[in-house]
Amino acid sequence: MFVSKNLAVNQQGHLTIGGVDTIDLANEYGTPLYVVDEDLVRENCRLFKDSIDRYYGGRGLVCYASKAFCCKEIYRVMEDEQIGVDVVSIGEIYTALAAGFPAEKMCFHGNNKTAGELYYALENGVGRIIVDNLNELERLNALAAEQGKRPNILLRVKPGIDAHTHSFIRTGQIDSKFGFAIETGEALEAAKEASAMEHVNLVGAHCHIGSQIFDIDPFVLAAEVMMGYIAAVKKETGVELTDLNLGGGFGIKYTDEDHPVPYDRYMEQVSAKVKEEAARLGLKVPFILLEPGRSIIGPAGITLYTVGARKEIPDIRTYLSIDGGMTDNPRYALYQSKYDVVLANKANQPKDDIITLAGKCCESGDLIGEGLKIQRGDAGDIVAVLATGAYNYAMSSNYNRVTKPAVVFVRNGQSRLVVKRETLEDLVRNDL
Image (cartoon, rainbow, N blue to C red; front, side, top):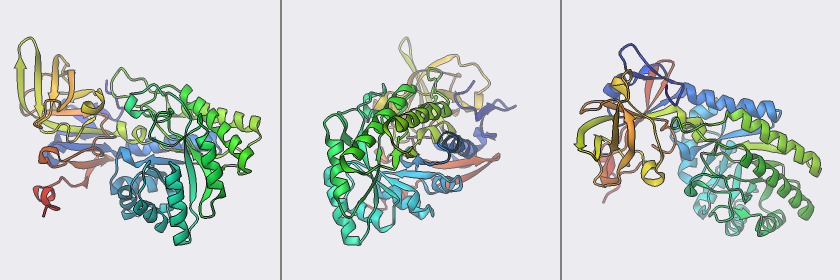
């Protein structure tokens, strides 16, 4: 019935998440409201971790991609589940450290890390730095020399794989702002330079071919290309890279049109290719890192809104206007992303209404979706937009001076506030 298995309808006809009535949540915490099922987050972490244990003999590390959803509490959950993290800014590193997360289990990404960010990562002992370009490599080597450090680094490599996703979220092809291309020879030249530097320790290679991918074949092909790259680096430099980071990008179910593959099937087929290529090329099977983000947090979250108005334009469309919109979920404006929606207080009723879900911003493009099937909605109803755990709170903004919503976690039938709703004072806190 629903895109996520943690959703159901109770005897009152209300939508529940993790066994908690969403109408009770809306009444207690207000709307808009992000709600995350912590039990499902933990279950998804264990699926990935178990796949590492099963297919790589435990020689690997699952690193949660912080950019999908970042707050102090999510890092506490990841540490409890023995998961590493992927961080892409000094802000994500700071948040993780503030939550007590160990720096040695962080992988630091980014195509334009500043000197300040690199210094901060070195100072705090971040475990792996994924180097994106030669300027960064030289900058990091110099900063490490100043600090008397020798950080472990991986080179971000573009394997030339078209992952068949939206053009904005394909990152493995040659025309990408990320990483070193194999086709041009720059990836091999980067390895030669890095291996000759005194103040960095080249230990591995990283690739990420895109996001929201449903096919297994691109991941298998990427693994084959990357193992070939490791072999080429060994031949040219004498250094056998010990770490292979295969990124993330595993798709989730947003609507009935999406058909994600069980995550362990990805792991099974990719691991078989890694082992096959290692044997063929005379290499050791590397330590494997994965960076799922959306696939861990996305299905576990929903967003609740209150309908403020219904506007019917005969023979054109019907708008349901809500108390949120592109400020808390910009993905429709950016990518035309599709969502399943439910009237949480009428979840047991048929979806016999077709509407456009409109946000409250002074912007014509402030929509969550068009042509959406939903129960008959009127002012005062509670709308639930499903599978919003990833890239919603993380991409929220204060456009139109709108305050950001609160975040609530539910676990074992109980709810708790993990991020407070912004106040009007928060909006002017840095104004002079």
